[in-house]
Length: 257
Ligand code: ADE
Image (cartoon, rainbow, N blue to C red; front, top):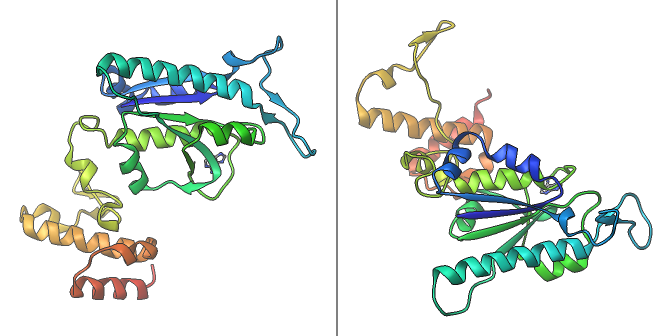
């Protein structure tokens, strides 16, 4: 999977993503991450890429042309790379994700959909945004990471790259951990414990020490349901629960704490 991030702050993105699990996956060749500096495509001698908005208003806007030229150069590279790999046939344009509070809110389902792509392009806005005309020409998906406003699209892009990357086979090493966790089955993850058995006078739940796998699975599922009911009851609507489990969810919703 190849990620391309169009940004005014390439170092921020690369430093953030070249560590830990994602960094290891890049080193292993499972992922490729390139940050493209939009400023390299500035068309004036001051290297500026922003200007005042028509009609007035606070702040500056990123201009259309540097963004467009950056995208065209990037698109050309992707097309050439793909042509080398497969002989003949049309090459599909990559999806271009613009990070904006006005987009669709990112979630696990969207991550799974994006993880099917070979290439993903992220466009990070700054200042008060980007000239609408270039967005109309190149953007395929508008995505927000939540109902709050950040200073730029870099952190949202990094969050999306992290989330999508861990769904790429091999990135997590142990593939089951991508399966059984929060939001799978629309339930939150159950609590987990490691050594020591007693810490700050708190005992690890005895069922986890029993070695009885069926009981452990049952306990974990119940804990997931209780947690979801308490913390994210909105998720329960989509969860598939048996009659008994629905009763457990109802009880958990009613109890405080
Ligand atoms: N840019 C600024 N705020 C954002 C948000 N919440 N999501 C995505 N991009 C953004």
